[in-house]
Amino acid sequence: MPPEPAISVLHVDDDPNQLQVSKLILERTDPNLHVQTTQNPHEALHTITHTHIDCIVTDYKMPDLNGIQLATKIRKHTDTPIILYTGQGSEKLAEEAFAIGVDDYIRKEPDPSHYQILAKRIRTAVDKHRAESHLQKSEENYRNVIDNANQGIIVIQDGLLRFINPKIAEMTGYTPEEALGKPFIDYLHPDDRNEALEKYRNRHTSETAFYPFRITAKNGDVHWIEVNGIDIDWDGSEATLHFLTDITERKRARAEISQREERYRALFETSPFAISIHDLNGEISSINTAFTELSGFTEQEVIGKTLSSLAIERKAERDKIDFIAEMHRALLSDSRLPSFEYSLKRKDGAERWCEVYASLLHMNGDRVGIQLLAHDITDQKRMREELKEANTALEGLVEEKTQELLDAERLVTAGRIAATVGHDLRGPLQTIKNAIYLMRQSPENVDEMIDMVNKSVDRASEMIDMFRSQTRYSPLMLGDVNLVEMVRKAVEEVAMPSQSMSIPLTSIQCTSPFLAVMRNG
Image (cartoon, rainbow, N blue to C red; front, side, top):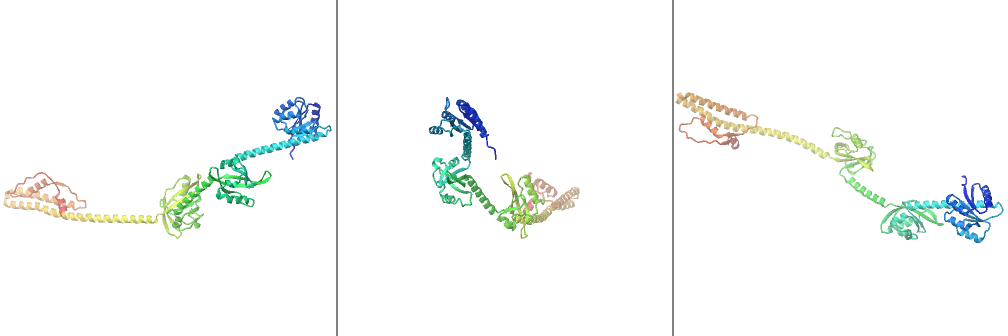
């Protein structure tokens, strides 16, 4: 048991002998009493304002100030216990003393044992004062806690509000004067009153510690409140102390989250993409309907498993990149993977080609999983392959037919050129025939005729060379020729009768006769 605390006593009396005797006997009777003495009431006032004193014992009859007057002045400075200790007591004096705040009244007695009673009365007064001070301080502390609490605090007794703290006034807009003494049910939302009243009546048997309901503020605003309460004693009668937490914002946030989750779930379930959600270890936590349609696996079959454990083998189209390695690289770089194609083995063994988009999932800034979106491109890939094969075959056919057309064109062109050359060769041959005829008729002109024959032969050779070059596998080249020069050369090669008509020629440009031949057949 801890030792009792010391008690500092100030004894005021104008009799020095009384002070000396009282000090000796009191300190001997109770070693925890430490007595200071003074004969001067004014000095006593100075002492209590500069020194800690637990109890003041004062005589009544003293010069300058009597005990009542001194006690009156002391009460202006402190609530330290005061005991009026006098040899001239009366009932009237006692009433006057208690009226001004004196804590006890004791008459002086000649028997020394009387000091034991005085010591006990001193300790009783001090203990009571200390207890009251402690209680008052505790009440102040509790009041500070309650007044500054972030929760609303109310006391309900017999269904009526007996106490509300400032937070309740802030929540509702009602002052204590407006709310106290009113039924608490009046401040609840009409739709919640019956349930709240039932819970209040069944509070001793209910297992629910917290329950929500709505209150209507003075301005009409509705607040969601979460309540829990305990039984207490209030002014000697049973009551309940309730703690109210405003959860309006929490409710609103939860409603928004719920709406977002519903929208996401709707998008998740109706998405044409096969979606699977994985934790950071690769285990599947959720799939949508499209994933089941694509893979053949139900949700019960895949939750908690990895793709590899389900034998969903993949063959990367680009360099056979390992799927898990790609996921880890994405985690390390905290980036989004580019889409890639891979083959998926369905539950029934069928192979489907997919285009996959992989991304990290975050929550509050932390990486929590991986989301895969797969799009079935089997039909598209087959169509691409078939189109590629068709294009290759068509290109070969076009090349083949083009060559056939070129060959046919060359043959047609060669035939047309041959007909043209045959027609043109008649000119040199006719010239040679005429030269021979003239040689026979005029032998003296043999040299001239021989020169004409040689020119005609050279001209025929040029035509044959042209025919050969035009019938090779090189494309037929067409160009412009000088028609006047061509006619002049033809006239020079052909021996014309002396009666030939002279035709003036001007220099004109004309498309090669071969072009006309080809166009006109």
